[in-house]
Length: 228
Image (cartoon, rainbow, N blue to C red; front, side, top):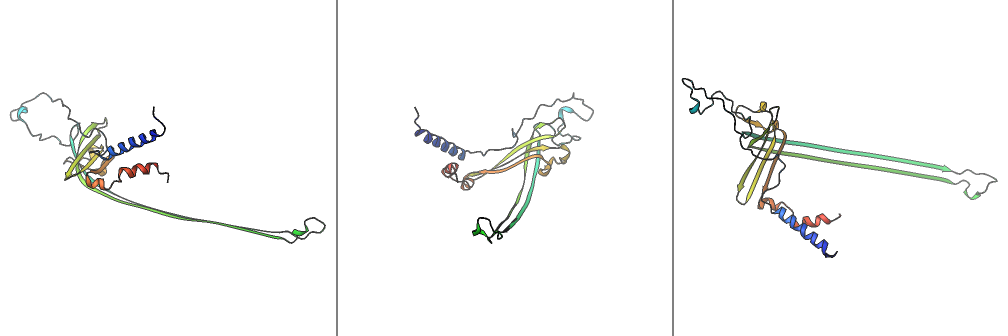
């Protein structure tokens, strides 16, 4: 039987183990559309029609076909051109004042002679001044090849992809997913990230450099229980 005194200790130990395992995970979590790749589907080919010059069985170059992605499994090169800048400034000023003056005149023949000629004055004031501001300036540039994982009925392409770059003990993950309109895909089969709808772009890393920026698991554990 578990005693009340040992139950919190076991809960703390289980939570600490979970935080430790989460910190030691080799691949950071992601919010991009899954899966991040797809195998190309088998496309039905028309019956071969050999001519005097063209031989379907030996043809390798599609001279009159557009090479832009259109099927599941095709790849698209996405140029990441994200520059976000935001500024927000707020201020408020509230003031309130009030005053009350009262006097008791002199009456004859009434009780309470002590209060005759008494004057009462009261005043109050209240003021509030506040201000705040926030600014953000982010920039992310690069290129990544993504795979078409679904073709919508209207022809739009759902794409998703990941790039891993390992430098020494550190690994950087670049992930992107979103919906691409084939009209926005250039003849070179490239599209700008600014033209990707429902875009989810991530740049995360693992390794010593990333771990140095994280708070130790014991500190995160105690911050969970601190009420202030």
